Image (cartoon, rainbow, N blue to C red; front, side):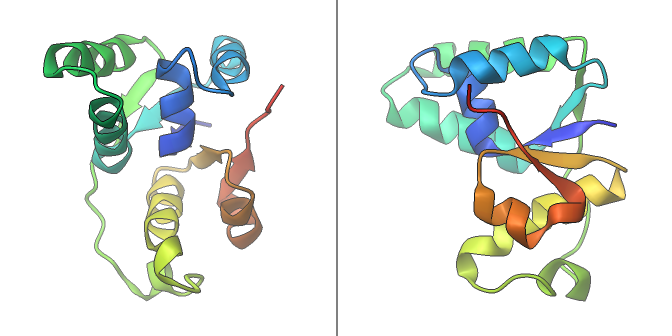
Length: 132
């Protein structure tokens, strides 16, 4: 099974000062199935790194390093918003989460996240990442 990394997991992997950097890195080293990113999660990483004051060259380099990992898969955001995406969405804060879960499901994958709320809302297609 391939894990679609949500933004927080992707950020934790790239940012050595992130509180979950070590557990996320250890998880990635153990994972043999592979992981996926998509334009939504890649865009969130770019936004985060730019907000942290990194220049475009460094941000581009970080993104290329993730994409170059042999276990990386890219999933395009190619699904429409549909009733299936919206049915478990209880508010505006869950729209992206619901879409990511729908995308993962369409690829027979699972969303890997640090967001307990996402896992509670979508337990069949998400997994809570280890924090230690």
